[in-house]
Image (cartoon, rainbow, N blue to C red):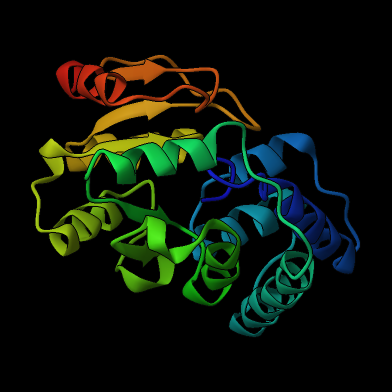
Length: 212
């Protein structure tokens, strides 16, 4: 969702930088980039490690509540689409393919994203707080495939971050990578595109054929 279909990583950028300032620090770009695509608990751990703040359960709970409140405020405004994303979702529907939204974002915030995306584009969705371990672990993609009633190895994932790419390939999916805020390393089985503009069913077949 964030950075792949919606240009919402910029909203998260505002929130996590404000959280760091709440603790008397400025978030470096290196730490910020490390957070992209991470699950909530992992992101908070990396953030506090990055600004040198020792955490307690109370600090982590308060930080999670701060981020949810702030990102909710930001998501109540218009959320821009990534280039070609809406047309790509429409293409998938017109081709009669099943589709799942798979995101490390928690369910309560994903619902705001779905208000922009449109729920009719998806047969199901799986969020980071609905699996034992979020990306980069593969559980979230395996769960999505299970809900779709298909084998993960017959699925194509579209990702924008190194974390998401690892999760998709770990589940056995074909993979199309469209980097957004940060670079994604080249690796076997990864098909790169500049954007979702012009995505077609043959492009999905290419990604499946490249799967490792």
